[in-house]
Length: 400
Image (cartoon, rainbow, N blue to C red; front, side):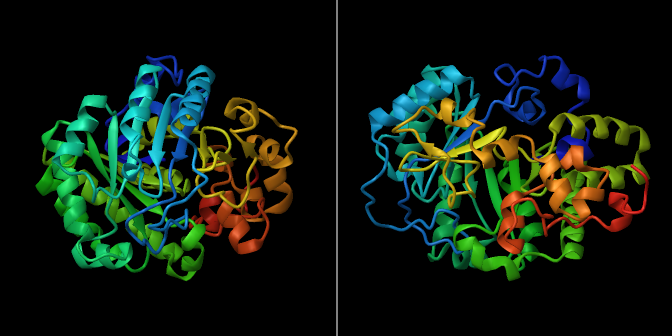
């Protein structure tokens, strides 16, 4: 994650993270990306079932019963292990997690073990009763996916009325005092809706939004041609920074993040070099703390059937299953070649990539997204094709 509001608008200083010693168990959620121990935030795709048919779904979710999902007791065993391992956050996702009747029980159990529990949902099933239940659990955050305003979102989600239902779910959460935020996956068909999303954020007083770059996985693997061009990506980041700054200047310091493309960090830095060189120095320090892409390090995933993945987009490769071995054992087992490579990727990328091998920002982006490199080049350690920095910006002709 790249905190646009933190970096560009100065809502967090380097010293804020240092005050907590940068231990992930002590850091508040808005500083977690700066932790030094990088204990994994774990996404548990607790069900594959979903009431929508999103065109970019990485889980190939469907509205049918799946027989191989972890039981409630197996879920509690997973949570016990994660809590003992020191994972600071468990993110309940899907499919659609609110479809599972034991979501409240499991989220409450995670909280009782000292973990922060958050959910990622399409929001359409959060009625007033469900919102009260989520409030009683003490969830840290509810992220609701909107991929455009009404017509765009409903087409993207494969269901008429999905936008209005999601907005109703968001409002129900807000009435209960639950922190909510929007999740927006950027592509050619919805990028024009970003200004309207910022308008919605202002109207509804939504405190957080995450803009996700497209990842070529699951049903999203068919959307490579729908990804933005490099120039479009740059313009979109400028737009996001501009609108974030406007809201901050209006006295609405919302949290804005971009996700799944770590060259956003240097891009913010380049802009600040022109606008506020002193602030740029602080931003460089924060980017170094962030350490870039954290797949297989600070982010992990467990599927509905217990399979362990490097992150939620690596469903085609499993390191093992929590029904057979604890997550903590699987996660720290570097006898697996891919797991070892992700945890120490620099030599492998340097040996296989072109741009990354010459890039002076490697330690800040950590090679960006490996699953995109694999999808396009059939090589996990090749360049990330979504990196939009120019040769001049990455220092192609400079001595390191």
